[in-house]
Image (tube, rainbow, N blue to C red; front, side):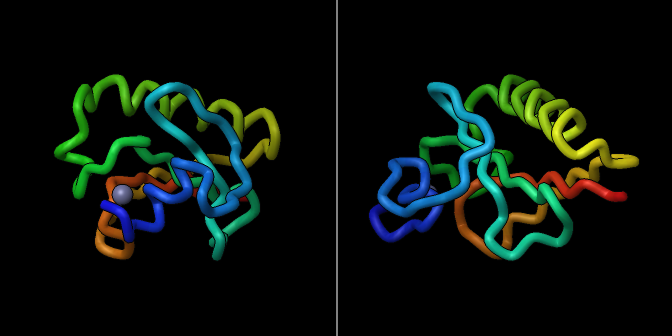
Amino acid sequence: MSDCIFCKIAKKEIPAEIVWEDENFIAFSDINPLSKGHTLIIPKKHFRWVWDVENIGNYFEKVREVKKILDEKYQPVFVELKVLGIDVPHAHVHLVPHY
Ligand SMILES: [Zn+2]
């Protein structure tokens, strides 16, 4: 999808504060953070819903890796995982640290 903002972030056409990435997924800071370290993890390939992501198990393994990065960097009490999917039409999950 050429007009998808998250596709543009994945292709580095729009700047973002990148927390982590690999070949298939990228994590970046939410532009309107609910707390310090609020991070989004998305597949680089466009899927409308998290349900559609190829190898969804691998996706969530990566989400857990990013959660561990946030644990080390921010030392929150816990990290909330939110899967909403209605704000931007590209599969994404939120990691929201709580203090
Ligand atoms: Zn997209």
